[in-house]
Length: 405
Image (cartoon, rainbow, N blue to C red; front, top):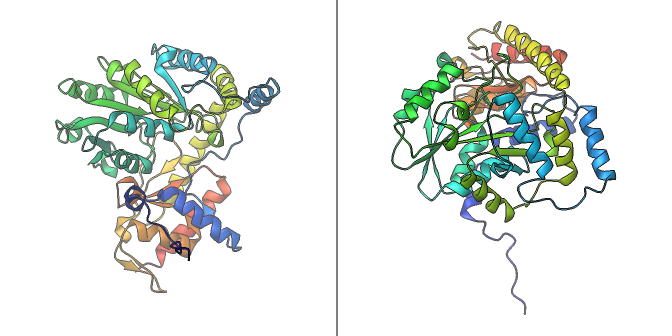
């Protein structure tokens, strides 16, 4: 007689200890409610609601017609890496070689490559909070220890050099942050980055990983990179990609610019995981980077207008604390004044997780708990949607909060 096979086989500890992406979880819940016929406004996903510009799509079609359907070098097509080098020189005044560029299947894989390439078990990574949800879990996946530098809305959600320095130890491997920031939209100024770089001169063993995926969605008109600070280029890794500034989320194209030894290590990791990104997508990305940025600028103008709209609406809600982010397309309001309250139908809100679930159930508005981003007083709302939906969502949120007592 054959031995029966268990209905469930044991999963790895890595998987069982890993948290599901909160943004993807909330988006899934919103989709499920929509499938049931519920009228849900989804403000959970960080995805531009604009289509990829026509000239980029046409470049991909031409690449397909020209036979770009085969494998590429693991670290990316030379043509794309050359375009990235030109972009960094032209827009950021940073000089790299193509061997220092690694193209990946999205900026998320760039983060994964770096963590796998740089971290040994027990190595520490400082994450200024709020941080993007996947940083924490990817660091853990690589055996690293996330060390959180907390900040508040009163600080515009920006950790200071003193906040960071207090957490540096002999085990600190790197600092990982985004600017413009997901989820807060905060942007580090030149002066703030220079102060951070000055502090880090005393800690030469600490690398900086600067996630600049929202670089172009910046309302200050001035993007600054840690790599441009004095003495920092050779110990900074830039992460960037095509998804946000070019409305190319589904194309899955990210890249890093880093010292040679890190680029070589990331290429080695990627060669055993996915190999190169899609060939025709890379051809289109090269065209995007070398083309006029008018479609990007038009998109950013729309986001700027929407930011002002959603802030004006949320500021009218009692007890809600709202700052004025300078980039990305998120609002990260502090909702903690409503904690400890209960709705008329018995729904008790004790934390940000409860609040996100309550707003989905009561207001049919999908948001994301700030707890997933390292700040459990806030929720994240994406305003990458129409003015009409933002007005409706704000009205629904206001009504749902008004019945919490």
